Image (cartoon, rainbow, N blue to C red; front, side, top):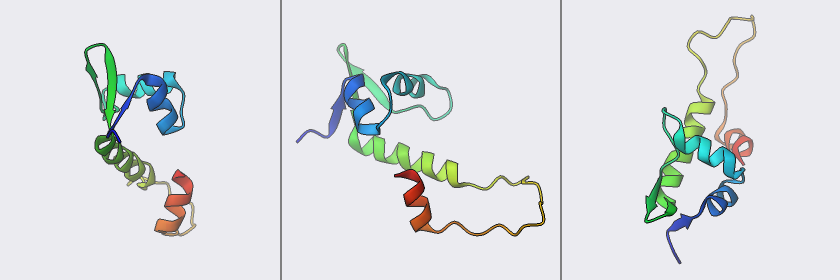
Length: 87
């Protein structure tokens, strides 16, 4: 079994997103989707994808340092909740 996902359609299917979204994420400046081209074929390494997804999950779960104090204590996010939100 190959450790690579090839074509934009395959990458989109693997991520559960649209091809357009995948192309956008590959072009963005801050932490782009780690794709590369071999000849005219776009490829995504499975290990690089897992690392990228982990960084995206970590980034989305961070609490901003300057969060407004609404008088409500923030409840810590458990790992189980984090996994349900991502899946």
